[in-house]
Image (cartoon, rainbow, N blue to C red; front, side, top):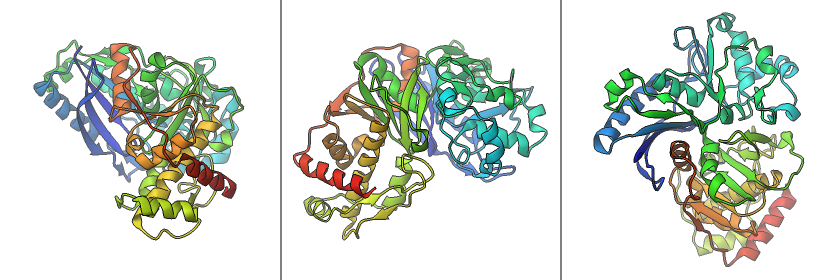
Length: 450
């Protein structure tokens, strides 16, 4: 196996990456916006547009480099409902849509307790169970039309192979539908009338099947091309480190969401009110996790500017203790319901950018602490290229911070599902910043404010 094509659907962009099987480096990555279509009947995703995009670039990748296998990773809080013929029973709801909150009281009476699922109660459709409940109640015929419910990675697997499944990492992503300790569906599946309709739960490390003849014809790929079961994207970032990195350690998967996962950390009580949850990793094991919408917050504060802070900006922000206090995106994260505010006015774009990077690092460290994380912290994704974010996080992480060299940690992790576990992926140690003492003092003031 030389080259693995990875379908990688994040909340912001849909990607197809070609990954070298040996090094797990991306040879090529193409993207398209993951736009939300406003309806009818509700805000949903352009699944057919993504499908055409994936097929086109699978053919192009194969023509130029050769594609030997396909893996799939997607964002969580997502499932696709299919009818008896395997067609969409309804469009795939956008989890940020507020409709499910209209039936929150009814749903709250149905959902199992956090102690049984590791799922905190979240707004909008962030609990997949709440999405399904609202859709089934809003469209009275939908339950009868629905023959199969597939978690999102397995929808693409179904289109590629004709085989149906759900994967444990997607079921374990705050769905309310899964018990991560017993490895079984929760009582909510029966409560929703979906018993017998959920795809069979499988571990992401298994293989779903070979591509359909029609896919081979459309793309030029061999009919023997294997497809992985697929995996939730944050767990794709975690997976490469499970074999090669000795516990304890933490992994920070960054993108639209910043998800902090603790492996072998301290066993502390998990607080669902602070967006702390139990994820399920590629092997089916429970992983204490916490998250906030860091990529979204970055875009909201950045407002399209790309200012690079200089030494004067750093001195000014430290001297004035210029800070962003949480939460920029108050619907999720460890400070839900709190209104963002600045402690002062940024005099330059560089000061604004620096305060933002430090805010994101402080939020990350808060999430790591809420999971009981110990050991080195490995940062995956876009924030691994933000030097000011890394400086603050390193100053607050006494056992060090490493960055993954992969540009798209989710893609390399998904590719590894097909190659099998190997050595830990390449990482780079982040040096302790010379002004670490000043950064720790800044962090202490930030914590006092909140």
